[in-house]
Image (cartoon, rainbow, N blue to C red):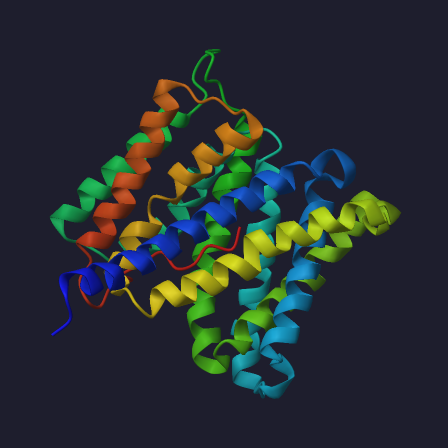
Length: 297
């Protein structure tokens, strides 16, 4: 019979791995923001997706999978959703803090989880999420005033995340892990013309490549690997509950790396959205999504 120490280690290790993964994703987003003055959010998204596509293609070798006519459409939609989610999320970071952008984006998977539910308890989570959104609305000219356009971009990223979940499940069933590589490749092809039109030859500046490579590693390669490790060692419901605190990681990353200070109301709004996501995951029935899935921002 395993000792208490070994049982604690087997439980705490995957939790720690997941925490590192979330910190890696949000650190990558903070680093990506440093590229905005050079190539804009559009160019930064392009560089991140191109490097991520190269990494995942070399690791997963997606050319080994066969794509049938029936599986092509979900795969294309998965890639477009992934590209749109990345682009809109980075566009939102130009004018709103990282933690708030992550919280607003989280409304996408939360909506997917709640859409088919009709239980009374789920209206509590809907109410909490709605309260969080209402608290973030830029009502008046206060210190915590937020840009409406930036909020719209973040909510648009949430819509894309919802589509990413719906089509990603089908793509994963059809192609397994190779579907992730194919999706990122499609996303890169979709976003690249937008980034090239915006940044042009600046995308080829060699001094930017180490930063772009670091963003791809922190935001894609490292967290995807760590989250896969955590997924194999944690119940899906526990995984989803822990993932729900990611907006807090975003807020802390923005504070530490970008000096983004949030007002008390904004912290309260983030907490409401986190609680709604945690509650939705913790009370999910077996036939409901038990986790918001791995984020790709």
